[in-house]
Image (cartoon, rainbow, N blue to C red; front, side):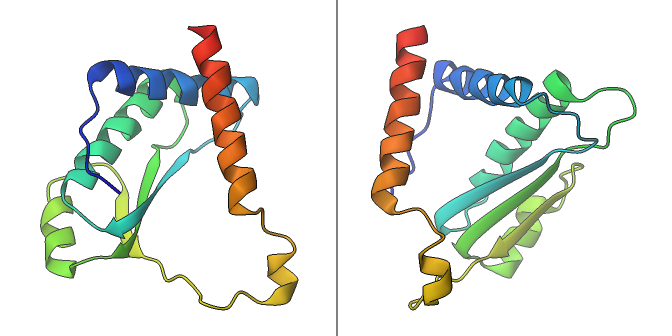
Length: 134
């Protein structure tokens, strides 16, 4: 997976997509949790990206009396010292943790999980819909 830098147009597209999905679902919760799943090791730039999303979600969706949005970064690996320094002066509630991929998923779970091909097809369909709306 590459570490490409997105331009502002791409960020705005992501923000509008998030806003539209939440508004369509008639979201009434008192708190939003934004989870970033990284298929690589933790990088300090991940905190800046998540901070950007948290600020946008709080500004666009948070109402008076709602709690602040929580950010969670899940990575395949992290260096504890790097994570501590990356989070040191961040005022928003953000955490970084590692996840482990199981080599053998129990059979009773395999039948309940979507196949990778189905997820890819769903993402492709969403992208096509978004492109046709532009």
